[in-house]
Length: 94
Image (cartoon, rainbow, N blue to C red; front, side, top):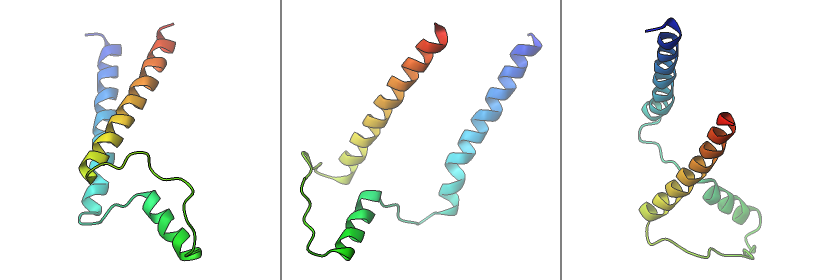
């Protein structure tokens, strides 16, 4: 094997370990913590500031459960990442 290949392999392994650490360490420090969305926090703050406020627009679709909502959000994120990755890969290749 060439030294360039070994160097790339080592760099990729280090990056993979860093990604895993970035994903796992916060979960260890915040075990048992509740994670809420920004939408709920904003709604609570708006209601606190102006109790008579009525939203001028509602959701087009309300998922039946939180799990379905999470699934749809994950699919949306995956599609977005796929589109961005496709165009970045295509740009790099050209």
